[in-house]
Image (cartoon, rainbow, N blue to C red):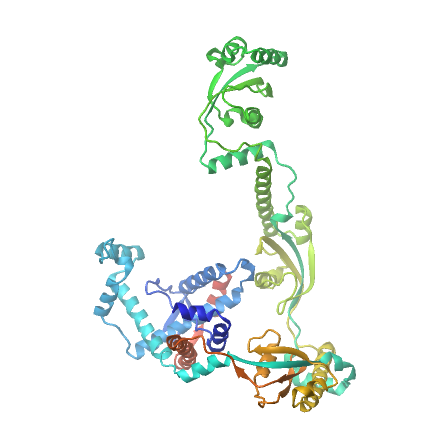
Length: 624
């Protein structure tokens, strides 16, 4: 199986999957340890129902799974999410009823045997534990009979699912043919006729425009639009110029705390107060420089009670010094045991410190980390200001302030998007989450400012105005669109006519150079070449050429028309799959064909069992 996985990572494997794998049916099949159904209905399915709590739980679970796969939550389309989850729950309920109708059930002995194998019920020795089983039931608020019923229901569902999916047939011969297709190569020459080169030759009459309008009136609709005013805020928008010494000290203390380091320096001090404190401090420092004993001078000159004990104040604790902590920290920075600090001015007076002992770990000094700590302090401050501003804007929006007032009050740039579209939106705010809130019925009715919408690493607040609902366009309004459509159709037809004439003149490789247009030689390509568009790749291998000649194929394509000239198709080398891997590949293909059959079966069940959706409850659940 590992070899198969490796193969599926190669280009033939990826193409094989693209060709063969049909989208899996979203059954929403939960574990047989799922919860109970809320009596509030979302949908009635035959004689069963889909409950409100069941639906909301499934939505939340699926949303969490998707958010783990994408970084920007605003890219999640909530409407599609709700639609897929509801379909999955209805599909499950249909299959459950059909399994019961067909008499698919499982005996208690079978369930007992399976439960004995469940790891969650085993003790440390790998044996079934009645205590763990009882705890499980108690935590779930279930009885043994309820668990058996859920287990039996899930197994019956699995049995029906397997009986449908497992019946798909895909012969090995077809698998081999599919793999061989990916190994085909040929030399190709290409020339494209762009429809834009013909549009000046196109003439469009008024009657043609009117005829097209009358035929396609139901499709010619204006898009639902609003004019959108919005503000966008990210942490990067927040400017932080300076950080205080206290904020720097806070980051340093946080750094030491993360390392599990405490300051074990023992220090002594001499405090000088009064009007002549500075002069006295200078005198004490001069005595210390002469070699006099620090403790003796502390007893003689210090104005702090600790002077009686030689100035000893114990382990250094920044909190003791309050607002002076950063000043004292700087004075002590880099001092070895026995060294004395200069006299520093604090709110207490002038202080002289001496490090008498140091049992702390060897960590970087705050000064050596100043640049890093400053960056961290700025970022912490930026995030704090950002969070406060988000809260303030949300409060203003909730209080009914306009987007203009909010932008002015909070100093945020106000931006506008005219003709903001509900569908096919390509604006700077094309995220589904923003579109959903901008076109929310209550937001449009009140012309209110939305709550904050997470977009990337920031937030957006928007206020829609001038709502224009979808409506059929008048002939006058539709004329520019119709004219462009008809012009492209006619120009493409001209391009195709020239492409067919060109293709008819090419029989050999020598004929390619004789044509009035130049061809691009693509060299030897396979079905996965990025040099061709999707439609061109299909054309490139659609016809075989004679052994000593070429085949020229002309067809309408995305650009207008294309002519592809190809030599004889060759199959390069051998398949990368062994016999066992081919068998496993066939199994994958059959399973996915079975999923198609399952969808057909579900369509049949929708005819057998009446499905009614409670639109009111559904709408309320989606709002939540």
